[in-house]
Amino acid sequence: MVVYFVIQYQQKQHQNKTDTIHMQQSFEEELLLTRAEVKEQTLQTIAADLHDNIGQLLSITNATLSSVNLNDRQKSEQKIKDAIGFVNTSIKDLRQLAKLLQAENLLQQGLMQAIEQEMQWMEKHGQYTVTYVQESDNTYSPNAKKDLIVFRLLQETLNNIMKHARATAIHCELHFQNQVLQLAVSDNGTGFDLLQPGGSAAGLGITNMKKRTALIGGTIEFNSEPNLGTTIYITIPYEQTS
Image (tube, rainbow, N blue to C red; front, side, top):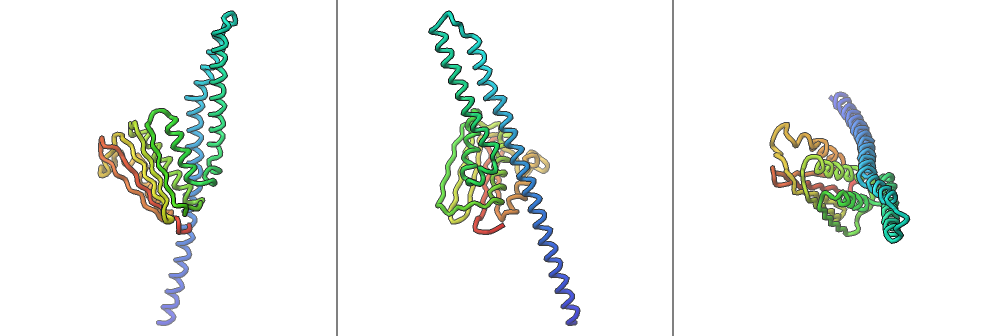
């Protein structure tokens, strides 16, 4: 009996070690995928801004300069001033895009700064009225793995709003107190039925978002009803290591 229990104990210990290794491998694979998705989303944002904003500014600049009539000095001077303004705005926007290309560096500077930057881009989109509230008791310290996943969860949420919600307003609140992060994002869009099997909720990647939140010891809740908008609540403990 003693030998039997010893063998059983050793087998259980071995199984626990194997399970731990598999869980760690799965977590690292998820982090790699998340990092790739953050980069992909960033590149899509850059491409859209180059096309919709900077491209348009440069086209207007070109049209303005092409219409300059040197024989009409007063109008020419005004058009040249306008063109210089368009060029300066384009340069400023390009510098902001360069910062976006360094998304991981932005996260290294702090999750809160990265989220604030993301909300500024949503406001710049011009399609939404954006409000952002941030409060912290200064207990936050960066955690590369958790920060990355939280940032990606925000990106997925905003992406879902743009693709599906038909919203006109977005409200985001970030609170960090007693080493616990709470992030809430709400919109005034069409909403969806959480209980409908295989419905729109499935297309929003809710299962994947829940999985990623659980990987870092957090919780995510969805509050939505058709035609009443959607609110997503994310809670992540930062006192734990991962």
